[in-house]
Image 1 (tube, one colour):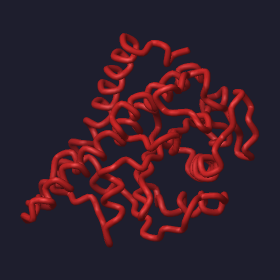
Image 2 (cartoon, helix red, strand yellow):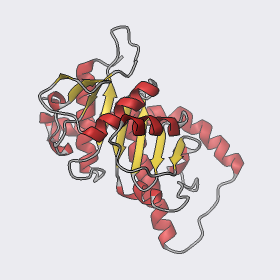
Image 3 (cartoon, rainbow, N blue to C red):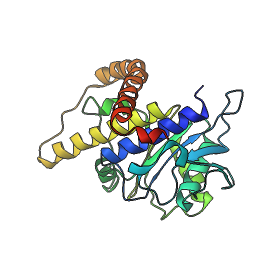
Image 4 (tube, helix red, strand yellow):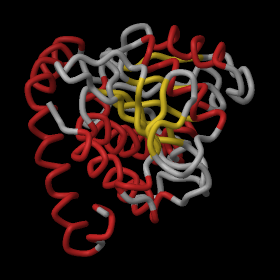
Length: 247
């Protein structure tokens, strides 16, 4: 079980790296991590989230806000943006297995959500990391300014860790910050390759069902190990170049 202090460091690291990779949008969008109970269980009724109005590149471990499912700030001097609370609080409560929830308007993955029937096609190795792991919300309902919209999004997830939101953006969830961030990163890479390939006007190659089934099994084994290695590398780089993120 990660300590709250380590969760703060990891979430700050993920926010800093998302900004470096151009996955952020101004001071909008939000990353959150549910805080476990002393016995390690996660109810989702308390979570850390980035402070309202801060650019992701300036977030530190201590600047993250701890709030409860009612929106009360339990730790921190900053506030929580309204849509951040309405989305993240309801997903954490409805899906305790979604211990970490990352919401972005990252360019290439969001571009797919603008297409009628837009889907991440299972035609490339990175995309195959997400085979049968993405849910699609095809109904844009406006800004998430009510918890009912967060509940609706949570229902649309249908047990999948990734949710692609029509005309909006994406949600990536997972048991740890490393797992969720790894998915966020590779989802954007897969979407980028698809957008570039489609822009040529050519036809996408198809991968047979038998190969897809085999790769699903391979990815299930490899994904956690890749996420762990990937995130440790990101922390090492920040520790050298931006050590203040741990403050």
